[in-house]
Amino acid sequence: MRKPFLSLILSAALVVPVTAVLAHEPGTYESPIVEQRVKRFKQSGADIQAIFKKHMGAGNFTAIEKAAGMMAAWGEEIPDAFPAGSNSVGADPTIWENFSDFESKANAFAKAATELEAAAASGNAGAVKKAAQAVGGTCKSCHQSYRIKH
Image 1 (tube, rainbow, N blue to C red):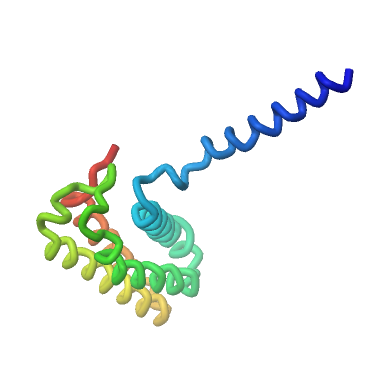
Image 2: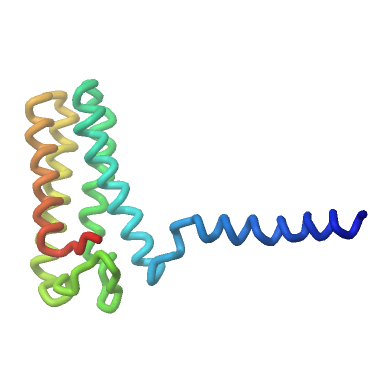
């Protein structure tokens, strides 16, 4: 009676970690730098969505300012997150063929996010809306040129 029970426990102990690993998305990317940049892009996407869908309507300028600051910092880091040879499923190879344009788009994103941060600090709802739209425009511009959507 003890052996079947012990076998069942050991089998379950082996299956649970494997299932947890397979269900977990991180680590499925080609390299750590790709995994990190995907994570940062997803965070920026979530931040801009929260700004439009949650924070602007609530007048939560503090949350907008914080999110914009994080996006601005990420915008400055984007070019470094795309070293030569770090190709990935969602990144169009033309990034590395036209890196100066890619850098320019990343800088435009950082600048727009910095302007959003300043608008949020001012508490001017109209300026925040306009600045948030500008941030969204820089995202769209880069995605149209350099993102492969699957």
